[in-house]
Length: 229
Ligand code: ADP
Ligand code: ADP
Image (cartoon, rainbow, N blue to C red; front, top):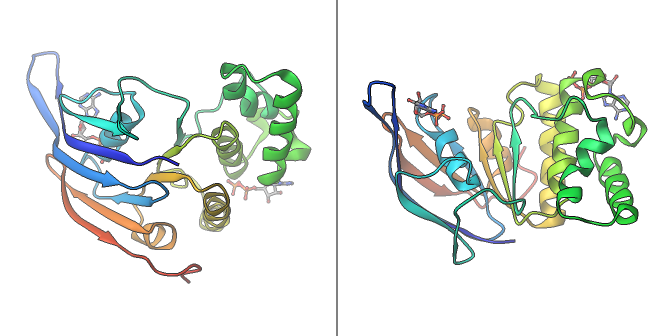
């Protein structure tokens, strides 16, 4: 996995009148390879903005983000994103969704098939390989999204409230699955959550951002042994 260095990253949004909305004060954060960082804070404090800048979906107004010593300028399949509303392709079935990034990477068809199969197995959806996305429950959709992001073997996984739309039982099941996958594949993870509980269960570091504009208020290591219940 790779580390992420966030140097003086700030963000202004401009409305139609040209007025600036300051979404992020300069943020500095040094995330080590293999860390699982939870970012918590109230709505509107700039969590998604920060994550989108790390992803390369949004550009910073000032400052820069470095991944393994390389300044990021655009999105990369090496920084996979998992969204709250899944963001699956509804016109593709389950295995085609998982396969998507592998196709972009021009992995040969034979190999793609094997990888998709193993990751569908990992998330317990092999029987749903040919199912329509529309036929799935929320928990199943998020499992597809997890398989889709992990199967391309990104160094960094970015997650924007991935379990926020799920019921408590599904959420706790998927949290366990995520932890198991994270430990097996040694990824660097940055996870946005509204839940202090979720941050404590999953992360080994918690960053608290407060509004407004967003600013890091607290940054703590919680190197507690797993499991933490
Ligand atoms: P959070 O993820 O913590 O809820 P966001 O990063 O979504 O916060 O938003 C931070 C601030 O930036 C908010 O005040 C929000 O209204 C503003 N903002 C976010 N995206 C845009 C945008 N595309 N245009 C204008 N303002 C935005
Ligand atoms: P949600 O709570 O968002 O609806 P779940 O993942 O809990 O999502 O799934 C809800 C229902 O979907 C389960 O009760 C089960 O009947 C079915 N389901 C989910 N995953 C599987 C699976 N791997 N195999 C068979 N059925 C499943």
